[in-house]
Amino acid sequence: MEFFLAWRYFKPRRNAVSLITLISLVGVALGVAVLIVVLSVMTGFTDLMKQKLLETTSHIQIEDHRYGFIRNPDAVLKEIRDVGAEGVPVTIRQSLVQHGEKFIPKTLIGIDPEAAAGSFHLQDMLKYGAMSVNNNEIMISTRIANELRLGPGGRMLIHSPAKIARMINVNKQGKVNIKKDSN
Image 1 (cartoon, rainbow, N blue to C red):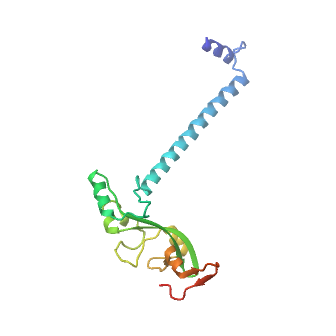
Image 2 (image 1 turned 90 degrees about the vertical axis):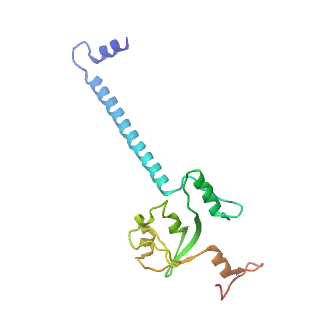
């Protein structure tokens, strides 16, 4: 029955497809095509975002909120490996990065490159320099390097909130005193 009605309105009595019928069909076809394209693009974008998130963040993070850190990370790593997973101890802290007169608040992520060698391919991520364990060297993103105009071997200072708190003393009246020797 539906097919008969559709055919009747598609082919009017004059045996020619009317202009209104043709415009309606083309409009519906274009609308469906645009909808398919938009849904395909959004699905692809969603899949890409999921992939990027999973590549840059861990699937599970284990934290101890009582202390702010895990007291015995080796024991936790052993349990993680016992169930067939991989893990690396990571320290994530807020800091203040200084280069010359410029100060930028950043989140620092600290890992031991030797411990992470099996899980992450940090050497592949480097654009300049080489991975080495040295207490005076850090790896920064190209975005931060561009922001601070730093190149390989460039120097910057990293200030922790605890270091800044030790430098400044606020008395009970709210007066700020800067300590001379704050090492």
